[in-house]
Image (spheres, rainbow, N blue to C red):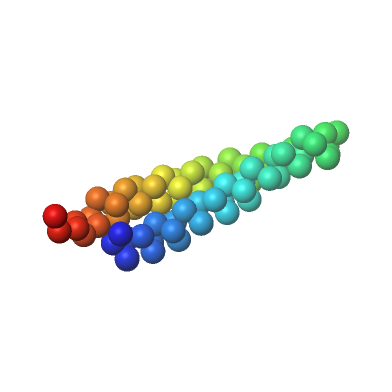
Length: 76
């Protein structure tokens, strides 16, 4: 694979996964552990961080496809 594109793809994918986990975890904890309280902060974190994580994952997938498409062809 194309080394720089694959390197950046891994970084974007890791960042996206971390942001998705940070964005989704508060709302899950709110539903499971603290069901009686008002979920304002959990909702705000989910609505601000999780979409950014999803965008990062999409960018990472695009970079993986670019790295795969630009890989050197083996001689036949």
